[in-house]
Amino acid sequence: MGKQARERSREMRKAQAAIADRRRPLVLGGVVVIVGLLIAIAVVVVNAMSGSGSDARNGALVTPRGATAAGALAVGQAAAPVRLEVYLDYMCPYCGRFEQANSAEIDKLLADGTVRLELYPLAFLDRMSQGSRYSTRAANAVVTVFDREPGKAMAFHEALFGAQPEEGTEGLSDDRIAELATQAGVAQNVVDVFRDRIFEPWIAKSTEAVFAAGITGTPTVKINGEVFKGDLYAPGPLTQALVAAKGRQ
Image (cartoon, rainbow, N blue to C red; front, side, top):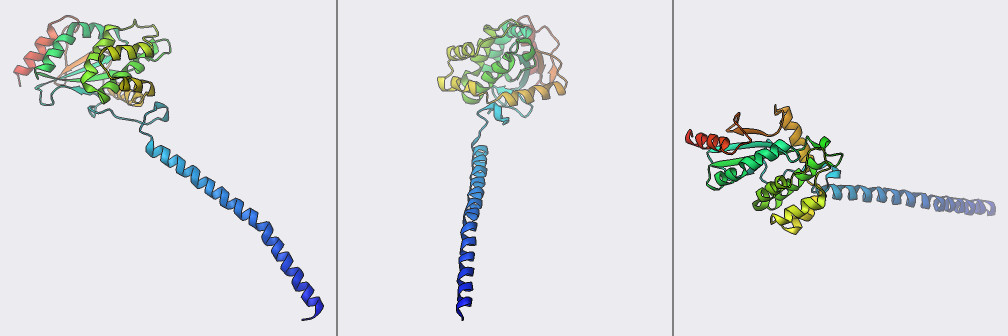
């Protein structure tokens, strides 16, 4: 090979090396971008898999333990001869009157195995709490207790009605709701979960489904699937109807 050929060969090798050097950062950058994308995807997947719906803002629908497919919270013995459905809103003043008249008798019928209670905590009266969404906040707290500490749920449910705010007000504060739960014997680690709003999507879905199925207001009460048309606001008539329903089984 002549001197000029050797020089051309040497220059070509230098040029090829320079091109390779210029390409190397580009390739490396592409690898970094790809790795970064893979990491980002992995983080999203892990977050999605680990998200149990502990924050309602992620839109996760979490069904509470003990809930029926229709969206009720079931209390009492599954084999009880009488099924009592109660549709309520914690802001509804008529629901408060119903509870005052009937809760003690319902508790007795639950205890002796006559009744299986199915509570539907609805949130259609959020519009009546000056933007505080009291119906949803109260219902979420109750559903959380049913899910985490069901033995305390009815006491808390009754405590909320015992301290029921007037319709059209802001309702009880989150701190007051938590205080009532603590007074009802709910463990602090359960009370602390209220703020996570775990069950708000489930409550919204249940409320929508209930009204789509024909419920038009609260309280609505059914005995073995039939709407009770007696007096809801005086002690006695509902109890008599429940005992009579047991006798027909």
